[in-house]
Length: 115
Image 1 (cartoon, rainbow, N blue to C red):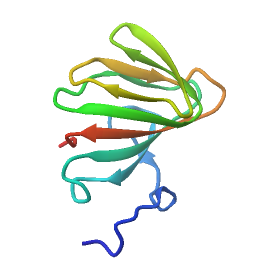
Image 2 (image 1 turned 60 degrees about the horizontal axis):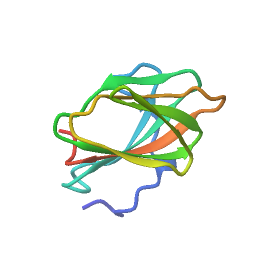
Image 3 (image 1 turned 90 degrees about the vertical axis):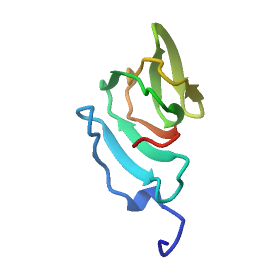
Image 4 (image 1 turned 30 degrees about the horizontal axis):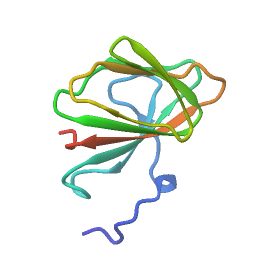
C-alpha cells in the first residue's frame, strides 16, 4: 500500500495525452488504487479538441472543473461548463472541444477501468 491513499493532483505532473495531441493528462487513480475505476484529470487548451472516439467496455463520466466546452455525443452537441457532469454510455462516439477563451479542466472517471 502507498504511504497515503490520498492523491493531490497538484503533486501529479501533467503529461501528453497518449492519443490526443496537445491535450494534457494527469493520472490520478489507477486500478492499483481502485480496481473498479480509473480517474484522470484532463486539460484541453483553448482551440483544442479531444477527437471522436468511443469506449467499447467503459462508461466515461466527465465532470468539468473549469472552463467551457462543447461535448458531442453521437451527432448532438451539448454545452458544458464548470460544475457540469455527464455519464457517456458504453459504445457512444464522443468528442470534446474547447471553443472558449480559457483552458478547460475536467475529471474523467472510467468504469470499469481502462485496461
